[in-house]
Image (cartoon, rainbow over all chains, first blue to last red; front, side, top):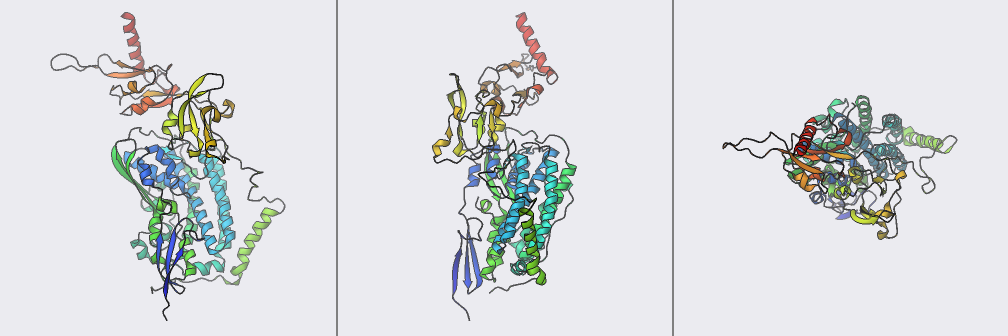
Length: 362
Length: 258
């Protein structure tokens, strides 16, 4: 017997949203028939803002694109400028960037774990993840002097060399964190409660994931092996030996596993980078006057494929800047993932996509 | 309604239902609360986090060191620094930056741009006030004592990459003091078809005694022929630019003979 269908608004103030956005779901009883994400509450006119600032001045506002993974957005912008104007980065600068990016990836995934666990109802894991994130924030603070908005990469390198005690502190933290990751396995994965809410929920077919343009852990969770660090290497990533985290289950649990494995691999990369890091300068010579030209950079953000396009008209500021945000695409795919599940599954499915509204509204 | 696909499920059994997660939280409880344990949090207003020296907190200005070059005001993305005349404490006035801390985003670009190490980011981070106007400082109001700031670094001075220089004189026109002098190099004039000689190639010569390291010449140069470097590696070092020195010597010789 068919029941009357109705629309329900979840958000903009709702415990599961993690940022300002609304998910309108059309329900038939308890079952979701259709969904419609509404975003734009956090729009700051970022691309327009860039047209009124010169190239070095854009770096600190790139921090504000995504407040959870500032470093990776700084890096996308800076490497886009370097690609546009053919600026060389010294090898030590590239290695320090990779170390900072991988620390940032772990910190970002830990924030995801914390917020995902509150959605599921596991508040203990939330506190544990935030506690471990603190160690990685301390590492980044030692590198660049700020805790959230780093402003660390510069056009042609990074702003300052790492402190002398940093490699030791970093290795200690990484070793400690790998022990803690085993604890998470006991706390989260071995729990039947978590498995009931994640296994077999939020099925995303590989073909759907490709057609909808989803990237990052959500795509790899559907068994499609695409990781820009491997498939289109940038910076110093070709020098490192690491594995791409891919899971074939296509559900919420698979996306969870992908991110947990990525944290392991990040620890691995940090260790290799600290071992191999060459001596030398960290900041190359950047021109003060930028010629005409256009260029782009794409990198593997913690959330997917981040893309920055720059059109330069020969003045000291860009003519046009375009940003491709991974989450903007992923949230648009929400109806396709949600259809057919119960309303109670919404927090678990949307939580597994790792929402960040700063970058999608920009 | 759309079809719902489910992947294969794994079950962890009775032990996983409660015991294993519980065991981890019990262990952490013991680790943090009993003997030898350390809590993971700080009691904030009483205890404070240890911050490194390069932490980017509230800005401070060492008035004695400021040369009034306006580099900080030019580089600031939010335009929160504004130049004004102010008393340095002993009755004399100086051209120094005023700060609107309410607009500052703590990016630290001004500190990097400052040639005289006059700007410094302190470890203070509790900047909340009741009134926005309390966060607008005249230069002497956000001043630091020199001993609270790091030691002064050597001033950077403009260095010439002669290959890029076309002798256009843009640096000479941009210079606020009379530091730069355009000098023609003898013997570089090209012969014209009618037998006369064209103008000789000119290069800038710097009088570093007058230079305030404002980098305006570097910004003005259209061909990136100038760069700011610490003085030990600039043109004052004879090993770097022997050619420049020769020109200067010849010029003085000519002056003497004239």
